[in-house]
Image 1 (tube, rainbow, N blue to C red):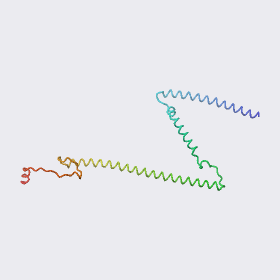
Image 2: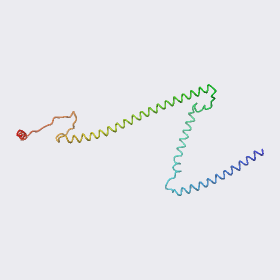
Image 3: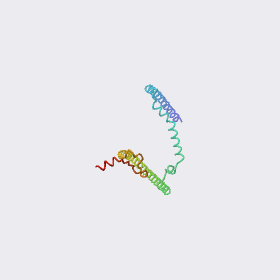
Image 4: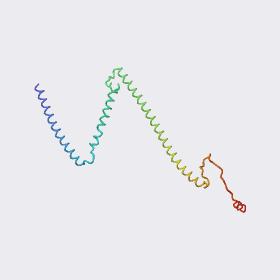
Length: 181
């Protein structure tokens, strides 16, 4: 009993020393942070203030993830202890491994399908962008060409359905001039 009391007293004295040392270091750290805040200035937010803003949301997210993990425990994580000489447990482990491999394949297939879909969508976007760019340059060229080739008397568009014959007014003096040539 006396040895136990001595050990407890020794542990208590060690704890008191450690506690005093921790209090001293905490005081030093407090002083250092106060000095740093004064050096940085109050107008500029410190890193601590920025992280404190998001600390609550991070803790909430971590708590939600932890709760989700606790609710969704599977046999894969629960049954870690096994004996390699026990055939039932080995068979159970083989089944678990096989189901994990199948799930992994399924996830890989889904990922490759998603990557293929992403590649197709990006190719369609690129082709649409290139078609838009080429059609804009073609339209600009056609507008320039139509301005060069269209006569001032034609004011309608050049669609196939809207084509009308050109009206020509001939003056007698022009006909006489052509006959002489």
